[in-house]
Image (cartoon, rainbow, N blue to C red):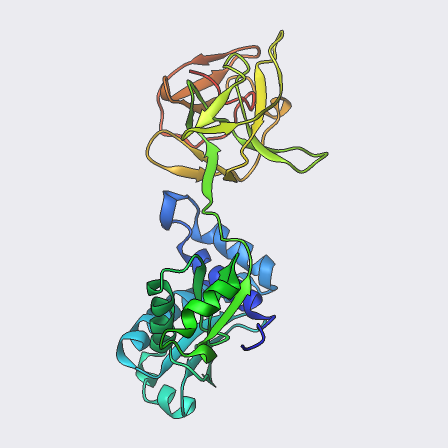
Length: 323
C-alpha cells in the first residue's frame, strides 16, 4: 500500500476555507455573515490585504465551478484543490496534464493562478474504486483523496477489509487501508434549540477545563435532553438575580450560533456584559414558547416592549431561558 501523504490535511483545509468563506452568508444551515466580515477574516488568516482577499475568495468560487465542468467533461481529470500563501489552484490530470489543461483554457478565469499536475488515477477511477469497496459491504469509512490520488479506507478491522477486497476486482494501488475508529456524525448544537421543556442559551466553554456546552435558565429542570440524548448538568444558580445553569453536549458539536426564531441561524460575533448594556437599549430574545420578541433594558428586569426591525445586540443575562 502507498504511504499516506502528510500534507493532505493542510491542502484539504485550504480548499474548505477557500470555498466556504465566499459562501458563508448563504450556505447550509442558513448561518449568517457578510462578505465584508468574510474578507476581513480571510485577510487575517492568509496575510493578504482586503482587496486581495476579496479577489481570492472570488477565484475560490470560480474554481468550484471549474472543478464541476472538468469532472463532467474530461475523463482524465484527477481533481482540483486550492492552496494559499500564495493563492493558487492545482488542477490534476492523468497523462500530459499541461496539454490537457490548455485545452480548457477558456474555462479558466482571467488572472487566476493555475498549476497543472499529473496524478496516477483519474477522479472517476477513484470514485469507482470507492464504490466497489462500499459494494463489498465492509464496515469502514471510505473517502476519496484526490490530492494523494488514493481511496482511504479506515476500519476497526482492517485485516477483514483486506481479505474481502482481495476477492474483488478493485485495484489495490488505489487503496490505503488502515486501522481506526469509524467517524461519528456530528450534529451542531447552539442557542435557541428546544431542549426538554426549555430553550438552549448561548454556547459556552469552561475556562478551567475547556469543556464545551451551553447555558439555559436555572428555573428549568437540571435534567435536559435533546433529540433523546442526555445533556449532562454541570453547575447552576437560582438565587436572587441569578437564574442560570450550564450543561455539556457530549454527542454534539457546539457552535457560536443562535436561532433567532425567524428561520435564521445567526453567528455570535461579540458578547456584551451587563455593564455594556445601556438603560433603555432595545434587545432581542427568542424562546420556543414566547417566540421572537424585543425587550427594553430597565435596570433589573427585561420587559417586553415593541416589535422593531433591529439587529440582535445583547442579552442582559446569558441564560437564554425565557419561556
